[in-house]
Amino acid sequence: MPTIYSSKKDEAEHLSGTGTVYQSKTVCERLIFVEGIDEIYILAELINDLYEKRTINNDIQIISSDGKDNYKKAVNQFAKKSVDGELTISRMLLIRDANGDPDTAFKAMQSVLSINGFTVPDEEGVLTDSEPQTAVFILPSMTEPGMMEDICLATVVDDPAFDCIDSYFKCLDDLVEKGKLEKGPKNLSKAKAAVFLASRPEYKPRIGYADKYWDYSHTAFNRLRDLLREFIG
Figure 1 (cartoon, one colour):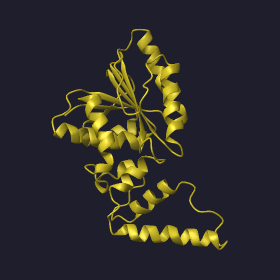
Figure 2 (cartoon, one colour):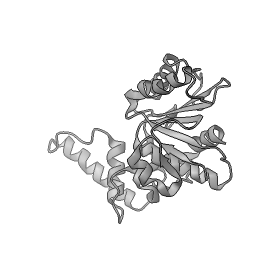
Figure 3 (cartoon, helix red, strand yellow):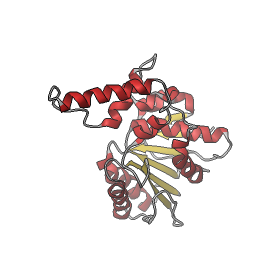
Figure 4 (cartoon, helix red, strand yellow):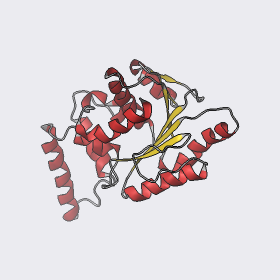
């Protein structure tokens, strides 16, 4: 099993069963930057699933940027170490939610790499041929808005509880339309994920901790799984 080094101590402890350990300093040549702690957990699950299929033989490090607006700072810390000769980076992957505009999200990640002196990929989801190799992955894709929650929800769309969830949010829409409720959820994807998790026997407050409820073998994860296989294998 590969060792997955998490930049978040609490999450590493939660992920101990997946071969993940806490490491505040960089110890790997292959780095993955993500938005937050949920992505660390989900990637750990996907990576170890690939390992079971014998496609991984390298350790990696997953670093949380603590929000979509903090990638520049997070990557810069490692760029400086690389320039100073303290760190050798062979591959770097930046994963970010599309939110409302996938093109804007992709350009923001291109800018992060450019400002920090790394090769900028022209195409999303494709590793460059440079040294170090770089790639940017936008969730769920470059053709639709959304986030990690949308991918997770897509894996359970056939669950019987989904009818109840859809009815709940339709009810909220009706209340807003009638003026009985000022506004509905600001982030519908996160709200739907939270309601789905609340429907489970054991409630998990974060999508990253709800590993047993998402289907990581689902086709919704195919794009991300394929890039991880190439990035790590």
